[in-house]
Amino acid sequence: MLSTHRPSRPTRPTRRGALKAAAGITALTALGGAGLVASASAAHAAGDGFGLRIVDRAESDPRMWYYRFATDEIGWDPGVNVLLPDGYHTSGRRYPVLYLFHGGGVDQDFISFDRLGIRAWTAGKPLIVVMPDGGSAGWYSNPVNTNVGPRNWENFHINQLLPWVDANFRTYAEYDGRAVSGFSMGGFGALKYAAKYYGHFASVSSHSGPASLRRDFGLVTHWANVSSAAVELGGGTVYGAPLWDEARVTADNPVQRVESYRNKRVFLVAGTSPDPVNWFDTVNETQVLAGQREFRGVLGSAGIPHEWHEPAGGHFVRPDLFLRDLDGIVARLRRA
Image 1 (cartoon, one colour):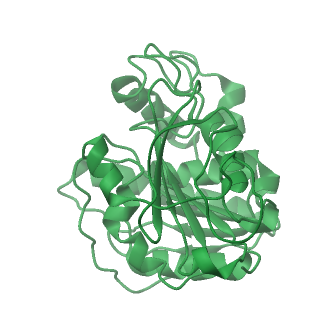
Image 2: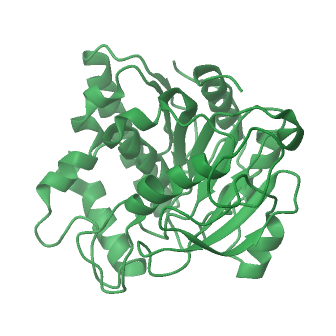
Image 3: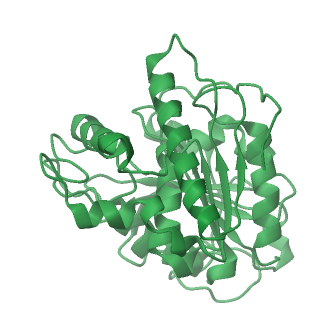
């Protein structure tokens, strides 16, 4: 479906704060002191498990709980915000979960969506939102090589964080109980995870996220390599250089995994008029738009339903379309 309205530009997030500031933004208590769900009653402190050891936490806020983990998959201690629905502590209900991924950049992290207004956007919605670190340029991937220790973001998210969430909160640990969404690099991560791990997510959304790794001589793949080498991997790369790991590129490329989106809700957003003075905005959203149009073409040829929007503007989060997406996610997933 084509969107014709022009959304207002939100305030851009500030640079990452210190660890204690992050802890102050978040908080609460999760379920299962030993990392296991014991009952669907009141919440209790979350525990270690699935290769994750909690090294910092804040669990006093009524909705936002913060955790930081030590894990062998990442060479530093990544954080996660878990935003609980209103009434979680007293309802006794189980809830569907949205995994929400931030974009790339040294000022982007697990707090990015809290800065943008996720608490207000989800007020009154029966949905748990999990917002993890994904690295400044981690590309939601296990890199081909790294010079700074492990940066296996894909393993951390899929093999560790996802089961940890199901074990410590009242969730539906099933296909119809989970959605995945993200902005920019995070939108790519959402599309990638939804295809590679078909049985994990019933809804996938990409807000200004690239959907084609090979078009224009592999521009997005080259950018993933260059950006990850510069700020994430100390000269290592996500896909390998000078020669790519071709099997990995194919496995991660949404346009080559089209059948993996069948029977899912698919929601896509790409801007049509990036800022001509801002080269970064122009290059980003121009490539996003072209890639999403290619992706929509293969989805349409395969007869796979999808909702798409091409609003005016460039590479930024659009709150109005995000709210529309949230309503669609709640409608698609199992009810609380």
